Image (cartoon, rainbow, N blue to C red; front, top):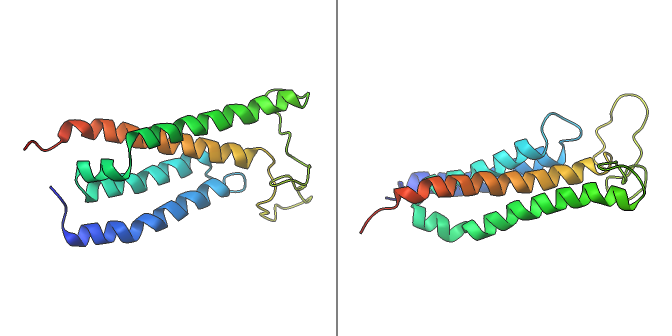
Length: 154
């Protein structure tokens, strides 16, 4: 059964803001409390909101289990690849090989109080993004599988 039009309209209005807030938490994870897991959980909350606002069949049409599983796999693959890339550079597993390179997230950190520069952190913000993708996919797939038993019968 669909929720009321008011609930669906509110969910449609809130959904993009929830995704933006999740991205903010992931992107600032190396500077503030938060990070990949928390941001991924916020992303999944947005998807769960849409699942609650619409019928299960409609939600599965929008958020396919296969796409979410691939999202989970991509996050895990990126995370492990970043960790293994350090070995290719002749350093230790999970070494922060991007730091001080001048590449994206590779700027040096100024001495003293943290000015909150997003372009620092090296490989950590990239791993936060990978963890966020993995958590988004995993939590959403878990919810979809839990709700698959609640389908309406014709």
